[in-house]
Length: 126
Image 1 (tube, one colour):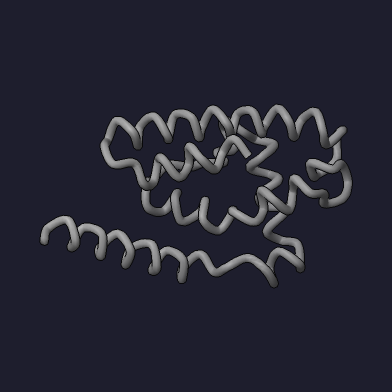
Image 2 (tube, helix red, strand yellow):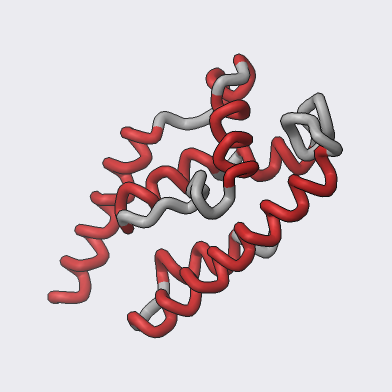
């Protein structure tokens, strides 16, 4: 995905400029995904049409971390005003029984991310 590398840069960039560029590129990739969903879904609810396909599973696999990013940054990645098809897709995907069983708990991931940030900040102070 063209989304993962800039998303990681947004979160882990060493400077504010790096983070800002990563965020900009991540949102550009989300726009591309919106277009891909429009084209590939052929009116269905998923990238593969009416059923879940490989792209759905690959993107769905990072949804919990995307929600953590939203919580930490205050930015809405899949915003219904900007990417309505993706926002609706997210809701459909997370309601799938398989997704409920497989996706990590956002609250636990958020705790982990905050602890990791605190540890990184503490090591910079040493």
